[in-house]
Image (cartoon, rainbow, N blue to C red; front, top):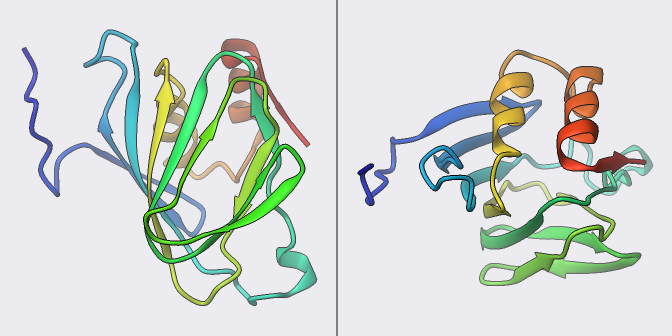
Length: 152
């Protein structure tokens, strides 16, 4: 049995551009049932700038995703509707629902993200840590083929 307690320094860390993540519970540990990530979304380079109006909209057909805001603020697009999330707010993204987010503030947003079933976290460690830019060709190819994802 794997440890059921995850310490503040446990897990596998990765970088996603200016964002930082840590796989706290991998799908390998849960038999593919789910995975849990700590995610720190960096502030926008220039808050409110038109260039930062990108929500990186995408969808996943083979898993559900959840987001819990622990600190900071996040603008979240869920199926065409934009909401501002604050600490304690939670979003459930069902399979196949278009979604994306951006941090339009000068402060980081600290999140807990889950994938149910798990597996998608493997792509962040594999591609993002290796320096591939957000939604780079390797990431997109594997996300599309393995997880029925699409990106706008």
